[in-house]
Length: 119
Image (tube, rainbow, N blue to C red):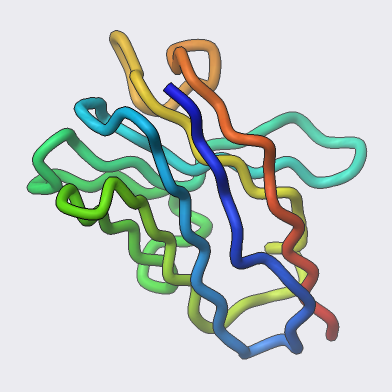
């Protein structure tokens, strides 16, 4: 499975961005993680194989929306009301095993896309 994330960029606080992740294989639960400089990679959001169940970190709940289009083999992360603390490299991942919240539970990873939110 190959994952290709895109859509990052520079945006002012309060702005919006949508990340996309194209996948060569799509029959997996998928998620988004992020890593800021000097910090651990952290869970952002996850979605089940069929898309009926979604999970969010408390820090993004109500602002970010994860979705998937199984016909297009694409995962999305709509990010609204962005804050400077959302600045990080965002990674898409696929194939969680026991828990969607931990990065070591995912089998496949994309290369990351930079999101920078200016104050």
